[in-house]
Image 1 (cartoon, rainbow, N blue to C red):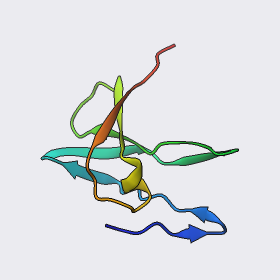
Image 2: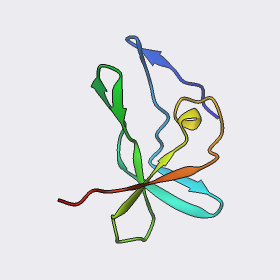
Image 3: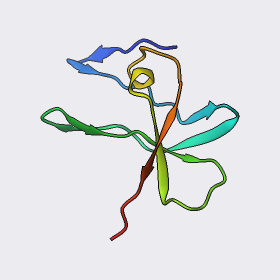
Length: 81
């Protein structure tokens, strides 16, 4: 488990290109973005081999900031316009 690091006053987010949880493999499709004013999004992951991008997944916040191991991936439904 990596610890979070600060660079230029900003905390770096743990966002490996690939993750595995309980035998399920995920690949990163979008990196973390700091939108300013305390708002951020991502990183988002997709299940490896799944072509339907209706759902993306996001790791636990504790994992992203190096405070805990990867315990869960949270499913996020992608809006369609």
